[in-house]
Image 1 (cartoon, rainbow, N blue to C red):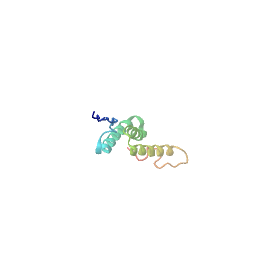
Image 2 (image 1 turned 90 degrees about the horizontal axis):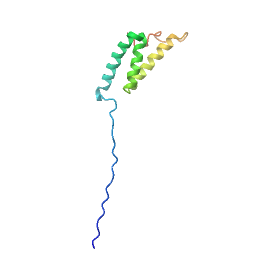
Image 3 (image 1 turned 180 degrees about the vertical axis):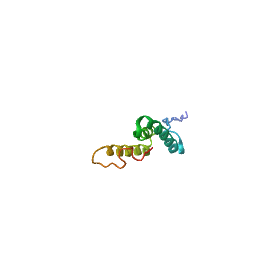
Image 4 (image 1 turned 120 degrees about the vertical axis):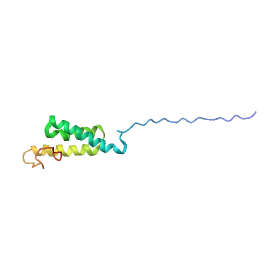
Length: 99
């Protein structure tokens, strides 16, 4: 009798990928526009703290490290300007996010 040839099927692990924020090469433009619109809206309610807070929220939401860092720097300048003896750059007006 002839030998039968045994064929083994290999299993392939299926990998699902997820979109990482969308926007492609326009992501920085979209993020900046969202942050600026949110910042101008939040400035009506939070005053000089509105823009840094909005930039931080958009940077966290859209996973944009640049916006998050800019918001941290501006918040640090605002806090240091309010503390006595710190001198704080622009004197607590939100740093480089001036309206």
